[in-house]
Image 1 (tube, rainbow, N blue to C red):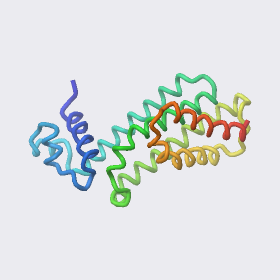
Image 2 (tube, rainbow, N blue to C red):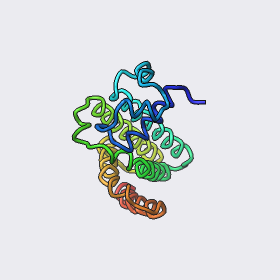
Image 3 (cartoon, rainbow, N blue to C red):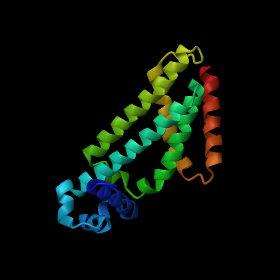
Length: 188
């Protein structure tokens, strides 16, 4: 059974997704969580802190999905494919949630900027780990792992908006495979 804080976070997620950050109130969250507004303040100091908890939970779920996908793949190529496809499917799932927010509004918050930087670093490190495995196995020939990982993450970020609206998951996987084919023939 979920604890009270988790119930608040889950309720807040649906309210933030529906109304966005700016229009959501602590009253809305309390109502959705079936709690008194005053009880929310026992767990969170502000709406911003609730939102931060929601985003951190989403990141934790995404990281677990990515790690599970990587554990199932055996080769460096398979791991890179699993990473890209899992990431794109997850971002597709999260697209409606994040589209309800205005980037320029959230950019004012240091915690969002810090979270984005930390997640970017996480992604680059994960891709570097996969690439290093491929180099160590003699599959990939890469001179600068950091730059290559950065380029792959940047390419995925550039495609995530377009791919978030792809209706067919199979089509999404085919597009990811096409991207990886270009990448692999450039590094094998």
